[in-house]
Length: 511
Image 1 (cartoon, rainbow, N blue to C red):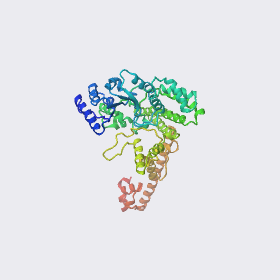
Image 2: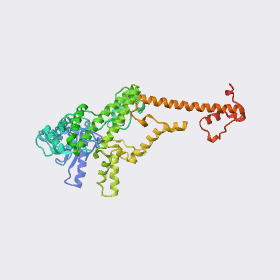
Image 3: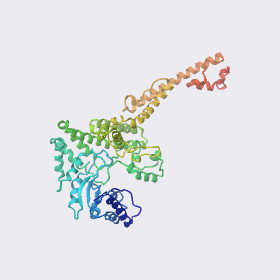
Image 4: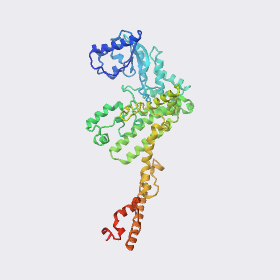
């Protein structure tokens, strides 16, 4: 049983009665029942759960009838600060992942030493190890190491283990990848800042000048910043009314070190190119590197906007968009990163058509909105699982992407339709030919469009003058247009020259 709701009072007697009532109900159904309780509440609501409150709950059932999952022991081990859960049996757990986020992340040193430290500690009540991740199929090195810890009783020499891991994973010993894993051990897989990792890279967030506004994990922080700026609920003006910096995505290592590891992986390509596990790791590490680069590019674009530098804004914006395409192409190189693989793996677990439909719906919502939206109740956990899955596959999902694509297409075609309706000719834009077009090309395009526009105006004015001259000579109107067919200059001409139908000329044309 797991609860994240704070009791209405901190009175230990009341908290003890809650625990007793829960266990009584369990034992009534099964006299041998054991309460397996997640210990997440002791971390997430540590302000409330002080020693008296913890003891009251943990001691409210007979000894041995409750087992606590030290859920986040790989980052925040509660057993250390609670005297072994005040003598209550517990399981050392690695949480590691929230929502199935795809990001290279881990704390290998903590995984290699944490379970053993807990087991050999004084008065230890640890009875086992566990994994309680919210998603798998990522960071295989972390889960292989954690799986081994259930069978180890002595401290692990991690550097030696990494060499053996590389040999097992790729089937041969290759110096470059062995050196790369040693770098990754001390960088990507050495997150010691205590932050619960959610992939907060800008490239996987909803489009916004400040993506953290749509980030549920940082919502309280953002709301507080908006209050301080005095503009809560006015996000569109937030940028120009405050100089506060954007919250940066979670970064706990030197990016250049990770790039060095990537170069070593690439150097090993001649020997390992045909090994599926090597290709997976290469794609994953490249994706990680490009995502972190995109964070910097995005911030550069925002700073250019703040500085009112259109040239820099255009450069960094196009670079960011190109990075999204590059990552998209990259992920298409490995089936493990495709949306189609994800959906099919879910559907294969079904035993009938109804389950197939349900499992596919679950898989789709997990990587998008998490549950159905209604007119009045909308999901607040959108993109809780920020999967970096291949977008080409996602675009095949008509229910999710087709409306977005149609809107995007209409907006892109709108200027062309306006020009075509006004001047009766097609117009092309710089991005039609080359999205990377420079300022000179854009200026050349603008000059040409400007010249075409003026030419159309001159032709219309010349035609208008010729018609006016004929009307003066004949004393009547040369062209008569039905009221329901007015358009262009004809519409303006008729409305301003109603009296010409009777043969008289308006005063404004007498000079």
